[in-house]
Each structure stands twice: as structure tokens, then as C-alpha cells.
Image 1 (cartoon, rainbow, N blue to C red):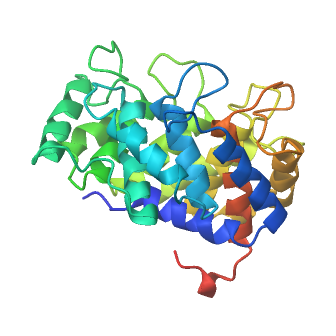
Image 2 (cartoon, rainbow, N blue to C red; image 1 turned 180 degrees about the vertical axis):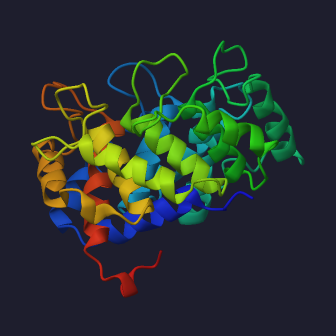
Length: 319
């Protein structure tokens, strides 16, 4: 039932788009990612040590720019290889598995080479311990409540290890139960209003499970169009008064997936993303954000790469 390659298709689109961006832009953000690598080969956030979460974003950023290569790739591979024995959250597991996949396919590294035979099956079994009675998945096995976002991450992990989701009908029912009657999806059952990011996660998951219909598509498009603000960016939900880069990136990804990007102001989205770019490399998360990190650098590079991808004639696009 699951369609293979969600993240791979997204990465390929980003690479195609990034190749059309100004070389100086690509160089300064490549340098930003590389300068963020720590002595252990991993990448850190705004403070603290290297971790899988930020390492995943840095590797995706370098892959987008076609700059995932030695010596940075070799050092990153060693870092990921040192983390394979831990019991991680869903987001860290995805960062580990997909980061390792990028390193293998784009740089010839083998960070998971020492794992025992049958590790994928063991991991699939472990992922089911994240599942809750409502059919969704929580952040950790000990988590009290399932969420749309962590269900999406778990589904991506299942995809990354090339297996099929277990009892997909339960997950479909869970995801559909989180749709708001006016469009958009709620992150958790008790949230007051839908959000752009859980909407993107729900739509991607349902499409991967071949369970997203035309009526849901129209409701989703109406919701996402309403979250674009006058500055061209997208807000996390319709009640928040300012745009942010994460919501802008995920909204654009969803609009492209639904083949409806022309329904929003693409030029405005590009202006908004550019307004958050730091001259020496990296991006801020929002207009009032004083800091920066590799996660938002990926969202900024990703948003502008996706917008450049949309400028490629359809017949010339690889995906």
C-alpha cells in the first residue's frame, strides 16, 4: 500500500531546484553547514552537543546543495555509526536512518554497516512500541498520547527501512479523525485548532497510504491558502499573526505534492524566505528570531530550492 520514496522524491526536487540557484548563494550556505560540524562529526543546534536531530537537517541541507562529500561525510558517518545502539525518539530514529541513507547513496559511506543481520525487522518491531490504542504513534514508547507528526515520522522510518506499515487501516482512521471540519489537521486530539505543520504531515501520510481523496484535497488547499500572510510567508495556523520559515517550507512542500502551487503567492513566499537569510550563511526562523541553526538553514535553502524547482518546465523535471 505504501508508496516508496517520499523523502527521496522531495530530496530530488530540492537538488534540481538548488542547482538553478545563484552559485554564491549555494556556496555560502554550504560553508554554513560545514562550519556547523562538530569535532565528533555530528552537528549541533544553537547550544549543546551534537545530536541526531540537527545532524539530520545538516546532512539534508548538504545533500540539497550536492555538497555531501568527504571529509565531512566521512566524519558524519562515524557519528551516526556511534549512535546506532541507542533507543531513540521517532524523530531521532528518522534522522539516523535517513541520514545514513543519504550518506550511503550520495557519498558512498556505510554508517550502518556494523548492524547485525535482521536489524530492519527488529527496528520495525520496536517502532510498534510507539503505537497507541487509537492507531497513531507517540514520540516515544512511553508517550501518553499519539500525534499526527510523530505518526508521520514513524511512517517515514518504516519507508526508510523498506518495509510496509502494520495495520495501515488503523493509522488511516487515526489521521482522518484529526481533520478539522473547516480544513487542516490537528496535531493531537485535544488541540484547539488545526496547524500547517500537522496538516502537511497528515496529507503526506495519507498520500503514502493511498487514502487521500479529492474532497480532502480541496479542503486542505483552502486551509493552506488561508495561512499565507501579506508578507508572503505562511503562519503556523490561522490565528498566529506572523509567518515562520518552517511553516512556509512545509506549506510549499504540500502545495507541490498536491500539484497546486500556483494557488499561492510563490513570489511572495520567495521574498519572505529571502528576508530571513543571513548574509554570511544560514537563516533565521522568523522575523523576530535573533538566532539561527542548521535546521532553519535547511528550511530556507529548501524553500528557495523548491520554488526554483517550480520554475523548471514540467517536461524537464525528473520527478
